[in-house]
Amino acid sequence: MPQGKPLVVPDDGLTTRQRRNRPVLAVHTGDGKGKSTAAFGLALRGWNQGWRIGVFQFVKSAKWRIGEQTVLERLGRLHEETGEGGPVEWHKMGSGWSWSRRQGSTEDHAADAAEGWEEIKRRLADERHDLLILDEFTYPIHWGWVDVEDVVAALRDRPGRQHVVITGRRAAPELLEVADLVTEMTKVKHPMDVGRKGQRGIEW
Image (tube, rainbow, N blue to C red; front, side):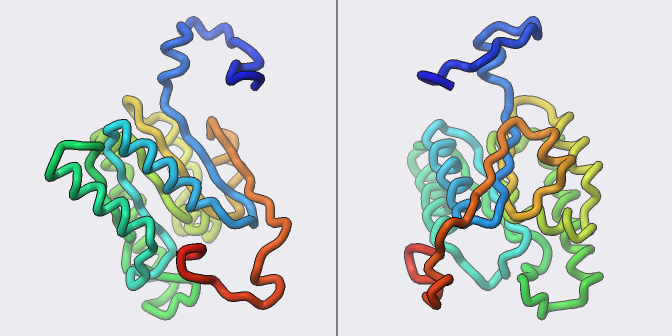
């Protein structure tokens, strides 16, 4: 896209303004670091535009509190106090199950994921948010806890102008097909390759 200009102009009957203002479904996938980080950066942009931000985390434990959550929730409080920016909601879906899956059975986790997705569908129908970030949502889809066809239909047919960002590895082909923007993070090098663990300010 030289100088931000599209390579093609579709014959869809829309004006440039109408086409520009269509809602975006973005997927950040791949094995590299930065998928969620990029999504939360977009949330900061959206907040600055006065958007209603909704973040829904699907895998990280409810006991974990990442730095972006603290910042965005503070911005949400700033909006409540001054009217600056937009409102922010941050939810850890279900019981906050993690990679270890130590809390509850697989059936419990699957039920929690399905319940979380049903809540998101209700919010999509109500047009409650201008930007929804479904963090690590590719995993419950990959594990079969949430039906991919249901996800595709709900996102494809969502009303209004709701932007949605989905993050996580192994994004389903059906999800990539319906998305407007797909970015694959490819790992070239990582500090863990040489035995360095995650560190404050970089990983959380």
